[in-house]
Length: 186
Image (cartoon, rainbow, N blue to C red; front, side, top):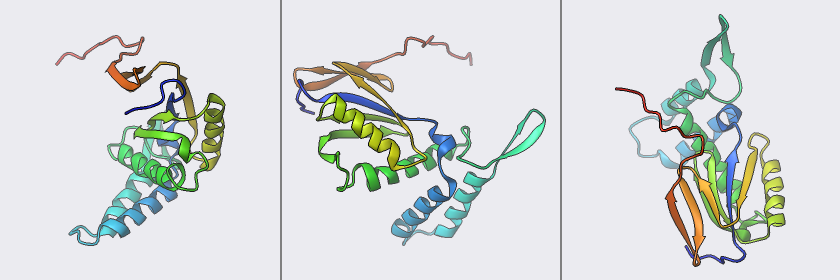
């Protein structure tokens, strides 16, 4: 992707504690809307899927210090359904807020790519404008709080090191400094 190597910024955003901050009722509302819009010809009744999602979100029972507890906010970290729920909720936020035509910062967003709670952003604006955007983003939804990292010529994102090179983005494999490359024996 071409970009202005002198002014465009490489930025990563991270949603803080996404799974435990997903609002249960709002997430069910997102799922209901998606089912209404996309499940017209399905053999699986949308109400059945919504009932399963409701159970996955609201019945997170766990044991802690010999007490049985019910998680009443967000969803559990270890559930196999949790990443899907998180992606659906954040996708809805992106469509309705970030990538919506009423976003006052939309013109500065040259690239917005997300994997669950990690976002890669190419920003066509100043550092100060990026910080102002972050402040705006953090007020747009009380359940989603973002942390931002601005790179100079390179920036780690997931398992990639992304760097600017002659007006292009170049990637290479990235390992965190704390990575010990420990593998469990079969």
